[in-house]
Image (tube, rainbow, N blue to C red):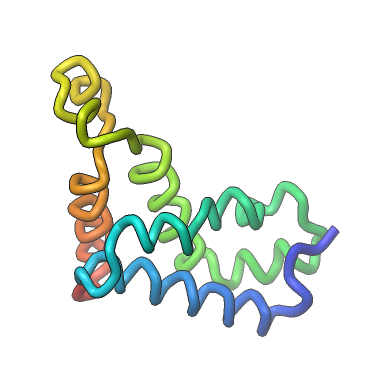
Length: 118
């Protein structure tokens, strides 16, 4: 099965979501706007290739470094996200949960690790 109609479709989609990550990391877009627009892109579009055919997996392999950005966003931000109230609680913070404010900081870290300026 294919999620993307072509490799160009994949690249255009990555461009859109890369820009969204950068916009939030730079403060051009609020985290709430980011979360609404980003949804769960990496998971939703099965960028790990588990639903893809061999051709699409080859596209993913060619764009692996770009796709890995979105795996990091999902693992380091979305999977750890909670409300600011819970994030302020020592028991939740100790388990690695972050609120929306902390999420923006983590997005910035991810972008900077990749040598991009937010």
